Length: 485
Image (cartoon, rainbow, N blue to C red):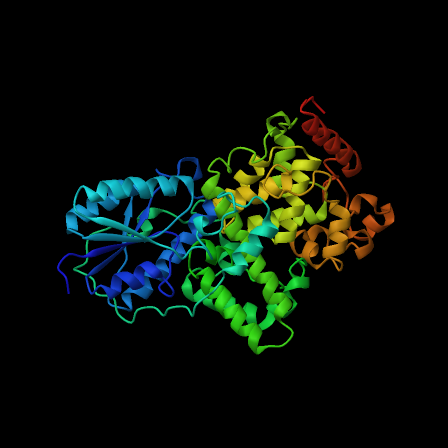
């Protein structure tokens, strides 16, 4: 065993299985110092939101237990990661810092700066892949740039997609004497006054074991019908793996490997498996875009969008955030988000379309709200998806695609189970009027004990008129005028 230790810097890779940096560090035979740094400095405005911090607390607790079971421990530190890691390397005489690669602009800049700082004290930084199915520089167009359209990206990625059996967690991890660090409670990641996380605790089990259980459940129950059921928020038809993937509690490689293995054993699951892989590939697509377009979270990907006549309306924005728009499928989605920290993907598109196209409120406002309230808040996915809905992103939805919140509710929540769960004040309405209570006859509303404007809001906008305004605004972008709507 060498005398100089290796620092294993955990980031959004909070697992022990299929963890390339950890496997490599243990293989050297050197003592390994696992460390996590809560860095609220480097990300700037993209410091983790409240829901993500709740998840992080529980994920770190789970990781710490897993390390302790292998004779190691997790050192916790807070502050500027560049300073913390370089100081720790100097203090311990570490020969290397091993970490998984990250792709946010601030994370890439941090890696470059850390490499330079460590080299000055005879310590090397080694980065390992594992957060994506393929590295951004591995899937490029013939011109050497990133793909801007998803379908050819998927073809290029799938052609080189060769998953391997996930590497097991090390049975033991040799670590030097325990270094003094912070306690997890010192991070103050959990909400206290008020404690709004009751719904999150009920819905989720953060950590590597929770991720593995979630994948197993999906492969055994939902994958077969995933291609159809993933659009139904009233059905348990999705994988619900996104927060586990974001925090690196499971690797994308493991998801693909196990999905393909399960599909090979179960006839009739090929279509569901293929759709699942395409969803994982969309995640890669977003990260590849961000790696090459660092302005993606702040500025429109497509040129000319600085003239769009967005509105600033605090009352409309507040109604959308609170799930009080008067459109049940929109309100159900926003309340699901607040209660559970996630929102069904189909409903995310509906509520996003409503914000940017019915209300004409800038997509950045929605992006910011999702950033604070989603447990799976991911800078690449969040920004790319909001721009996609708004029409200004890569491979964006056509500008004339404006979701009708009534017909979307009727199509994807036909029995009203989703709306009734999250908008219980409408529970007694019959299906025929559930998704448009403002069109229900007075006697129907009375029988359901609903007074619109008191028990449930009237619509904040008329969708038909809002659609006309939105189309006019988009036409102005095409014309480059940006005149007010």
